[in-house]
Length: 41
Image (cartoon, rainbow, N blue to C red; front, side):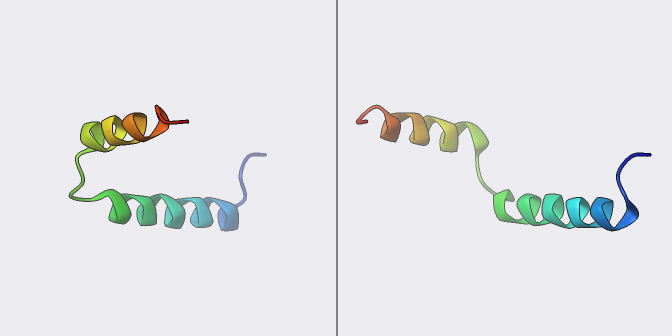
């Protein structure tokens, strides 16, 4: 049982892509910015 090898590979690829996208970004600053934007809604 569990996740199939194909599905596991897909998940790893997605995770690696997310890591690439967020590399070099300050997570705390991004969260602060998003919270400030949400205050207007």
